[in-house]
Amino acid sequence: MKISIISFSRTGCCLGERICGDLQERFYEVKSYRKSKYVKEMPEESECREKVQNPAEESVCRTEVQNSSEEPTCQKSVKDLGNVETCSEPVTESVREWTGKRFADSDAIVFVGACGIAVRSIAPFVKSKKTDPAVVVVDEKGNYAISLLSGHLGGANELAWEIAELVGAEPVVTTATDLNRKFAVDVFAKKNGCRISDMKLAKEVSAALLAGEEVGFGTDFFCEGELPRGLCLCKAQEEKPELGIFVTLNDRERLFTNTLYLVPEIITVGVGCKKGTPKETVENVIRRACEEISVSPAAVAQVASIDLKKEEKGVLEYCRERNLPFLTYTAEELRQAEGTFTASGFVEKVTGVDNVCERAAVLGSSTDGKAGRLIGRKYARDGVTAALAVKDWRVEFE
Image 1 (cartoon, rainbow, N blue to C red):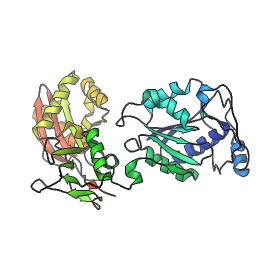
Image 2: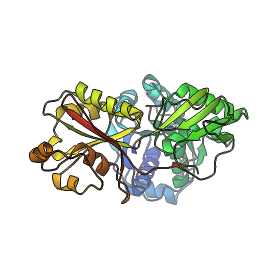
Image 3: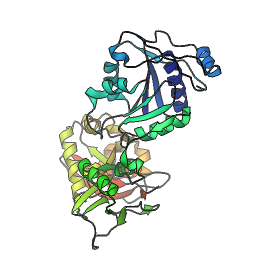
Image 4: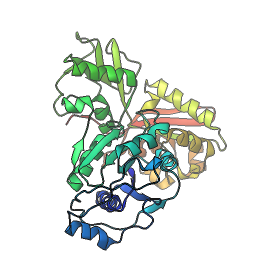
């Protein structure tokens, strides 16, 4: 997760640096910023430590700074800020402009300051809970860590809890399923790496659970853990609720009258193609290869091929458009793939290995020493070959 933190006062900078350092220790990619209009110079490390030693010291309190040229102050006590490093980057542009850039390049934004600043800054850029980054607000005293936007899919709730734990704050989470300790389908989907077919239907699932209604649950995969309260496990032949969740690779199979599909992103598509093949052709062949075995294209997690194709424009454009990783392997690595593959003497003569797409798919879907399973053999059309392999995966309930 890539996290950007912005602060608006010297006290806020000290807390922002503390959060930045602690999150980096947990292997997050974190960058810290300060609004230079209000904090022209970053406080020295000794100043932040002095606040630790003198927790009753006054600190700058800033509210609604975007629309004010003054710097109102009030008396506050400062929590133990712990170990800090002074490395924040000054922001000379408006906070709104800065926020727009962070919406494009960050997974989460943390405002160390007033909620009003955050709300006005993010307002022009909020689009969809599927794409918006997590937004968390922490007051400069470190009393509260507030999940403001994208609590579930974006991960703001979890980030607020984590920051609260790090700085001794009170987490503030307002999503109904969390408050009522109900199953949250969007959180479940995120943790299991599934795509949600219909966000409107996902809201209906949450509403039904909050109302105490039973929601069906079906899956093509093995389940680990206890089924959450409110869900009932259903099979195709059984009498079942009208509304239900179906974890499957095939989003055309209707298990319930109103079926919310959760499609696990566990498929690696192995590809081979003639040089210069356009993106549209690559896209069409992959789609048809998926249709051949009733797999939703939403299940594709990555694309793989031989290293000879690492600069293939059509494949790169296809992956870039969908934000998919593109893995490449040497001929020697492909030869190590386990299984029986569709061999071609011509392909071996050109590439040094008898099959590219099937072998690449299997290698790409191998995890933790377990080889991927080939579920769609070589599909060839218009100078492109595609094969599908699935990694070892199961549904996990906490």
